[in-house]
Length: 410
Image (cartoon, rainbow, N blue to C red):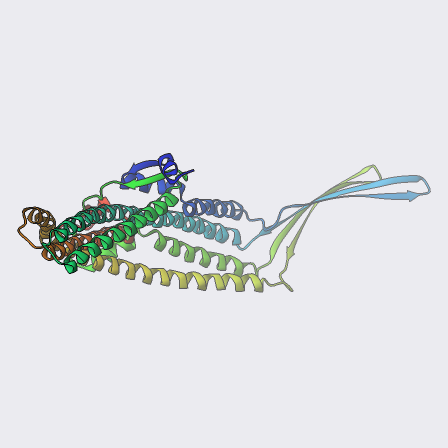
């Protein structure tokens, strides 16, 4: 099967940023795994709210009694249940509830991370498409210019050095276009992976949404918002709270456990027996040292994780805020000055060459400078879009909600 037939069999799907993000969240393996982990925590909580450390023990026995008068059978049964008197079950239940909240928050955080990855991949594809289109246009012009230089060389209007320069520029432009096309195909494959698209479906990105002009008084504003909204901070806090309660429950296991038994039976086939027994299971030899030690280790690990997450969130927020401010300023400067001049020069050089107003060498220099500036603007545009999404993720917010949450420039 030829490459052309394979290409024709592919189905191209144009997606918006919102549609790509929604699908990525729906099919993300990380989100699925995080949602599945919630079930385990809920199962633990369901078992924790009972004051019974074990299931009841059921016993039944029969004894044959042989005497001068004949043979009779004694039957007896017993039901025994241990009951925690120190309230360990309440602490375990509270710890399990905190664990459920922690795992639920981690599932929310998995969605935050998956959404950020999808948005960045979408922007990578959108920029790669624009680069491929721009360099392909530049390559087409370079090839036209090389043919024009050949005709001038044949007419004796330029020397071989100028002709070779035009040929080199055209070849370099086509090589760059092929590389950018490969990058665009790789970016499409990566986005298709995140979206779980079939093998014969190729995604294409639509327009990048307008990036809002955000402004905030100080980084303390961003940190306050993040601390109130970040699900990984909530998860770490609930994890530590649960670890504290599990440690308390483990320590209370050093106290005796009440054992209650109901007894009954029939003796010699005639006498019916019924009674109860009460006892204490004393932790004399097995004093739960391993359980207490493991619970204490879990608590220290939870405390360390909470501290690490808090530091990570602070660094992430400050870095995202700084990147957005700088990238936004650079993008506005490019859009206002550099991009306008570069776009005009691309058009003017083509017109000037056709009218014979500039030399071939001047066209090569001016055109190359203009295309380089346009490509650099695409890099700046990707940087500010990524910074926008990273800031939204750092604040656990939707990108479109940042103007309301953070504030806009006056």
